[in-house]
Length: 428
Image 1 (cartoon, rainbow, N blue to C red):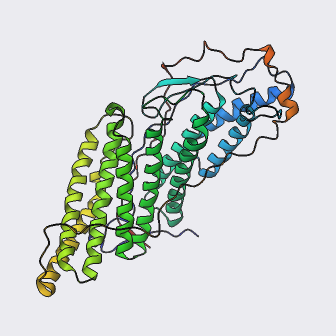
Image 2 (image 1 turned 90 degrees about the horizontal axis):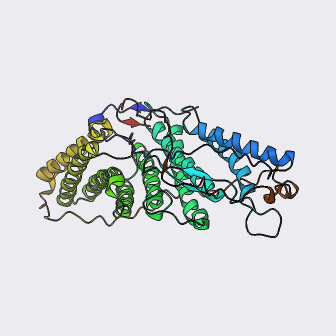
Image 3 (image 1 turned 135 degrees about the vertical axis):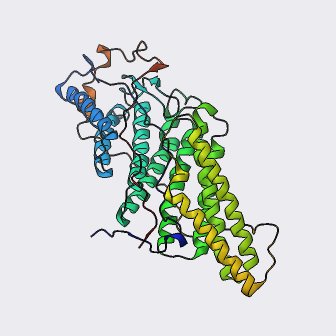
């Protein structure tokens, strides 16, 4: 039985334990692929592989925009396609390092940041990387949609956390294992180059840790652990932001603004909970200064939210500063600071230091690691006998006329991922 959340009766005293909003860039779009290898596929079994590649690819593309698609359905659909596609990548004759079919079909994909201008490569690994990239983007969008639900359950929160770690793992494996195998190097500023894919990896990890922080607050873990997790998460967002520094501002500025506001939001969290830790250790003056620093970071996050709303560029648009999760943190910082000041006026009489206490925090638990991504086994249809029946002498190995860059392709029409009404604080 799923555990349902309930509302906190003292909402004004505690922050919302689930961040309901994530920035998302668009899905990659692609041109249709027929896999019509007339003459080359010289047996019924070879023709069936081509037909199945066409249908499984179309089905997987449909799943990206199906609002009822679940991670289980996505994995099944992607595994079916990738199992067949590997027949165009892996050698089946025992004599070469790659399939003779790798360069026979042209593939065309757009970019998550560069609009509808397509890149084309006549390379099955380019197709594998591009499609898997979209699978990872889908997992982040699924997590965002689920996190925006009203009255999210504990199991759903776990699914958000799991999906973000899966996405990070896919991005990481593509970067380390598959992208280096491409003959044509990744174009600067596009999805497959290190700056962009590194940012997706780190962002996915940071967002997964937001779920961990929510859980830690919900279960009333030590303030020191929550402060450390928040500090680590803020550092993740800062790292992601800095990774995009040299990218064209026209396509990355909105994304960067999101990363900056999340960094400041979680620095505010870190200083707030560090202040609680200091107060518990009878360091009231330092606690007050830490809470004052939390107010500064929160005010800057508030300003960044307004700047984000005014930014043009790829990605979702929202009003994060107007959502309850954001407002609750401001109230929580204010109330905690007032409590520290009252305690100091009645009990401690400590001097408030001019400098904020350093956040020398390291989380021992709760850090989100990418889930390793593995391709499914090669389809049973792809046997050495069937492989031998693909006769490249009866068809061109490449079709350079079709491998055109800078052609526009139709963008993906995505389902509405706006969060539902933000209802406020939740507790176990």
